[in-house]
Image (cartoon, rainbow, N blue to C red; front, side):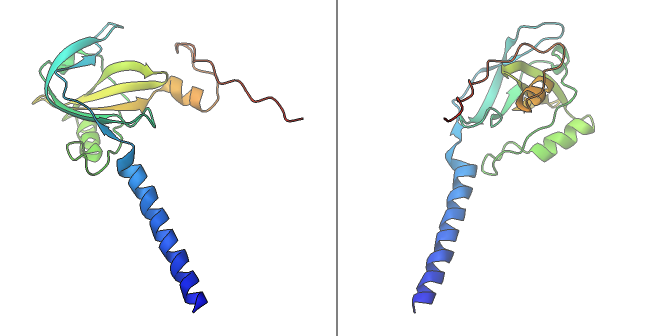
Length: 176
């Protein structure tokens, strides 16, 4: 009888822990963003971003990670006037945020049905906001680690042309 109780306790605890981990990963840390009537995009040949009008904005973000941002909207400007982003790789969104399909966006970028442009470089150090725009104006945005961030987050020196990285936290003194 005790063995059966222990097995039920272990299996039940495992199921609860698994459910908790799944829930925290998929739902708990995301917040829906309020509707917005503009997004920042980087024009060709410019370093500063400019707000561009949008409609039907839906977005999610999280304070737990700088790359959890996702947004869907309709862009009212021609994407050809913005800085191209050649290495765009959309990141998977939670399945409940159903306007954002990273696989479909990635396929559209690969075969030329959509164009990736730079929303804002270094929205946080090493993180760019990327926007994929379809000819009909549908647009999808996400945060992506750039080459400066890849090197910095791996602990390597940043490549030439990168802004200086932020100061790292001071190391803890050795225990005595």
